[in-house]
Image (cartoon, rainbow, N blue to C red; front, side):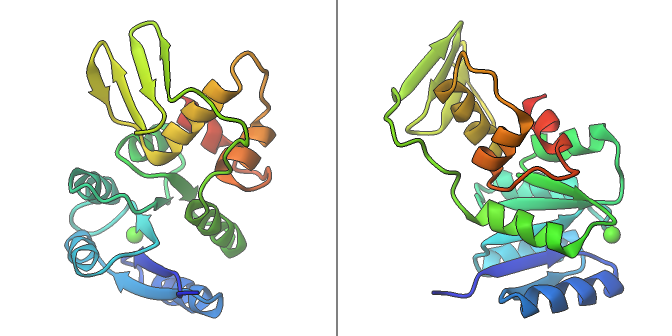
Amino acid sequence: MTTPRVLLVEDEPGLQLTLSDRLSAEGYAVDIASDGPGALAQVQSRSYDTILLDVMLPDIDGFEVARSLRAQGMATPILMLTARSQVTDRVTGLSLGADDYLTKPFDVRELLARIEALRRPAPRQAWAVAEQYQFGDVVVDLRRAELTRGGTALDLSAKEFQLLRYFIEHRGATLSREALLQDVWGYTASSSTRTIDVHVA
Ligand code: CA
């Protein structure tokens, strides 16, 4: 089994040290970038299993870094770390291509659970579903993970698409936040159930 490699993009030396020590102890290889340009350069030079991306960076912020990575076609899961707690910031981060977010200060165990959840592919249903699903002028191509509305392609993050797939597979059913967290994110309910509200929004 190869060692999972994480890129930590964080400008605070204290947090760099704390998180990299803890992640290393948990068996991750950790690279650190202190700013946006450094992160973009690192991602060019090697592949990562997960990118931990602080929003508040000295020059270009984490949102911009996420946008650049996705614009380059980078599919690596991005977990945004934000000191802000406003829902608008979360929505911004997720709409720019982040897969999940965590508000500082956070428990390191929570961070580890999120990283693991992002690394695991979402559980698939055993029963087959149609490869295409249509409602109104929206067409969802499940096999190619593409979404179009009126023939125009729409961008969704990986998690948003998994969530959409889950809704399609369970259409007509009432789904609890706990079930969504468990089945789509792969972790059990915690204080962070706002994740679901934000993705659904
Ligand atoms: Ca920072």
